[in-house]
Image 1 (cartoon, rainbow, N blue to C red):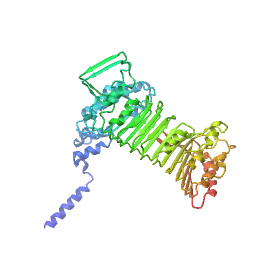
Image 2 (cartoon, rainbow, N blue to C red):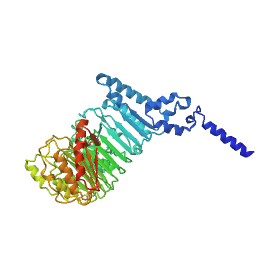
Image 3 (tube, rainbow, N blue to C red):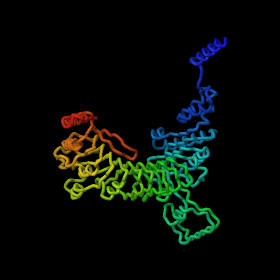
Image 4 (cartoon, rainbow, N blue to C red):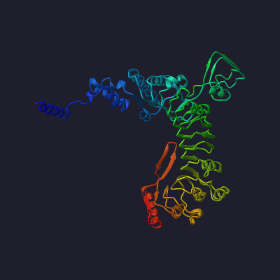
Length: 524
């Protein structure tokens, strides 16, 4: 009898599960519903509230708040933008006023806002910090390259215990600075008695910064029984990732990041203004990934980071100092230089663990003294390098000068990529460096990739040169479109008509007869 009842109960439950009219999701616990709603964009999460009474207030406890109005703003121009900005700010304010959850793990604002909205943005940040936010993102890009109206991130507003929950911080189109004594550039005498004074603040007293106009009249300063500090990122000591894009960032603030944020593993700075001498130095830094790109005033970078694995730089030629980087395995160095100068080449070759190297190079006219100097250059040996990627800027073609010498400097090279950007076609020119057979062989080179391949004589000769040099070649990939590395990573760019692309592929097919039997030719 008991077995019979069990069978009936199982059948009943099975029928319930198969009932299509039953709202099974609404029967889930609030915690699960909140997690589901948190994965939706804010407006969709709000719209769900009309489904039933059960869902009416679920969105008010969502743990992920992402306010993205960028697409709507980009579709408008002129006078339409101001009302839209006001509507966006009002919307965010209302959502936060209605939110009664105790925790927000992620908080993101993506909209073109500037210092005029500072009061509201500060309140949003305070809300997120009060909810123990772990990931905080402000993407306020407005397409204004002047930096004059940027919102100032209020790093000085929070104590360390308040901001300790933040693990990931991303700022775009913000002003980041360390007020300490940065503004008191006209001081002649300074007396500090019975004060709380950190090493950072004391050291910064003797350095100059910006925004000095407000305190420039002060010549003599005496403080007694005061707390003096330089907030910068001092309060954000739990940060693991930090992304700064299109920001005003001084040397002092940047350098202090690595002294105060002892858990940082990933740092990206793109388009920073006022950053001149960047120092990535700190005791036992856990930093693994560092990117500095398009910082136009940058003159030097010094890195001392035992755990650094990947370093990416893009911008003008600079002074680079790499010390105590035993774990550094991958470097992308895209400086607008001819090849790389001797100093940089020597610095990079001294990275004992370097396995992957990507370089940006431009060509010079083959009739200049510079051409002859680079052609005869002897590169230092990259003893452990396995992957080499070259982006070659060639508005005209003079052959890739110095290329054979660079190949000889990489005795263990296994993969080679060469990406040529847009260049004028000159079917009459032939490169004397790649026209002849290679003087030395690459004993371990297995894969070669050429993009921006136009099928001209010099393209074919370069490919044949590499086939002959790579004695254990397994695969060669030919791309008729160009690959380039920008501020935000690799991108593919097709600029030719389909008919031209097909013609180039037909020319590339001539290489089949040059390939060894064990190697594969891929044409894309």
